[in-house]
Length: 279
Image (tube, rainbow, N blue to C red):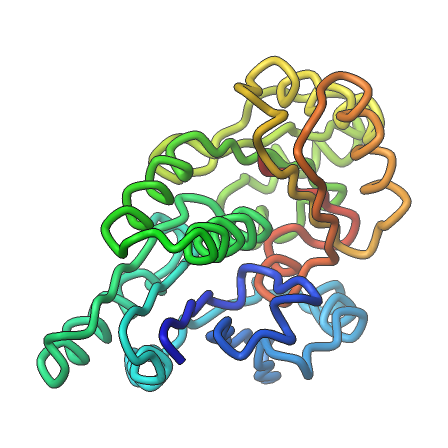
C-alpha cells in the first residue's frame, strides 16, 4: 500500500473505512473491574454499558502500544499517517510518536506524520476523511500535512451527557456536584479548547434544553460550514442524534453529514445517552 492511515479506536470507522485496507484502527484496551475489553470489532456496547453501570469503580483505558503502531506504519510503502485522540486525555499520541521514531530509524525514507486530533470520537473520523480526500487529490505529503493540520485548527467539538457517572467516578466532577446535577436534572453542555482539554460551556435543566443550547453554540461558532462535514456520534440513542442533526441543519448548511454509534472508548466517555458533535 502506498499509504496507510492509522487511527486509534477512539475514532469511529465509517462503513467505507472498514472496507479500505489503508485505514487501520489501533485498538485501545478498556477495563471495568476485572473485565478486559479490546476496543475492536468484537466490542459489545450494550454489555460494556451494563458492566459500567453495575460497577462502583471508574472504567479505565490503555492506549495502543508503540509496537502496534509500528507494525501498522510499516505496512505503508511511502507515506503513513497517525490520528489519535487528544494528547490531553490519552497517551495514544505519544505512543504513536515513539513508533514513528522507531520506524524511521529502520526506514528513514518513509514519510510519517502523527496528527494530534485535539478532539476525539468523530473528530478523528473527520480528520481521517480529510487525509483521504487530500490523498485522492494527489497532494504531496507536506501539502497533506499542512492542509489537515489547518483543518484540525478549525474543528470544534461539543457534547452533552445524559449520565454524569463516569465524570464523577474519574474525579472530573465532585460527588456533590454530580448529585446536585442529577437531582435537579442539570445537563452540562461541554466542549473542547483549541488545545484539546474539556471545558463546560453551559448547562440546562433537562436533556432537550441542553441539546438546544449545544445546537446554538454549534451554529454560532460555525465558519464556512457549507465546506465542512458535520460529524455526530451517539451512545445508544440514535433518535436523539437524528434530532440533533436535524436541528443543526435547520440553522446551517453543511457539505455532508456522518452519523455513527460510539465505539468503545467514546462509549466510556459519553456513557449511555451521550451525544458528540464535531464541525
